[in-house]
View 1 (cartoon, rainbow, N blue to C red):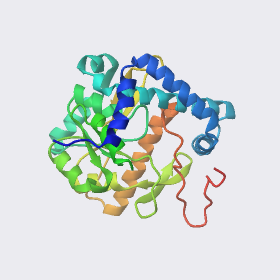
View 2: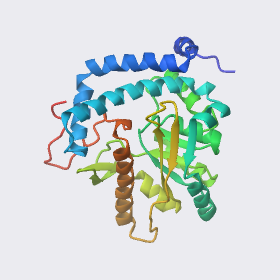
View 3: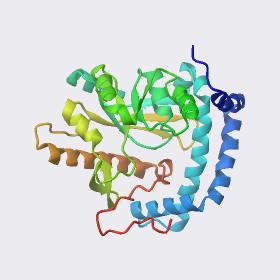
View 4: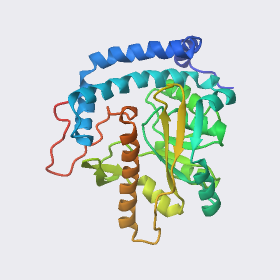
Length: 305
């Protein structure tokens, strides 16, 4: 039996205390805390404003400020919900979550014989997607970036895997992903982060090209599985209610020239992500330098951030 190091126990004690606070009260406290962060965090407000200018050049400052403020508030709500995961049993999930388009995954699995790939991003409360889907439809797997603090990383992973999902470490993901899809599981991959020129291709994303990971497209082409958009939307009227929306498989031609099809498919993934963000712009995480990597000679849009 593993004895947890004292450092890990130090994180667990405040976590247990937070778990004792009812979710609505905990969410209110976290939201107020994030509003304080919003007021003080000029750096990330500036990054978000640059991103919104790129994505929505027609947007006025008042609307941009509203969206950025809502992003901070919803991060507080999401953190409060993440702490609640051990109490999100089947009765809770059936009351607060619904799935739209789940049949698309079942049809794809029946047709290809391997698990599909889920194209997703830092949208809504993305941490709740695998938990809710695992309870309502069956376990899924997803790629994560490990945290630098091992004790905190272990605690976070326990919640991520609470309902039977599997968190696959990003740096050893290839073999693990192949194993999961061969076992018929969907694997979720976030594609909305900036990558360097070695790990991505330059394709359109909103009004400017962005280096985007080609890993999802290459994996789909190599295994001849399907890619589906898979996002969780927070209900704007009932903040603890969510909809998991699964899209139809993206058009793909495994017999086309590999590099050309990989680039075309990556562009399609960005287009799907863009559609989702346009539906609810305040639910995407705008604080990341998404357009940071630029072609030679093109200025960094975040130079003043």
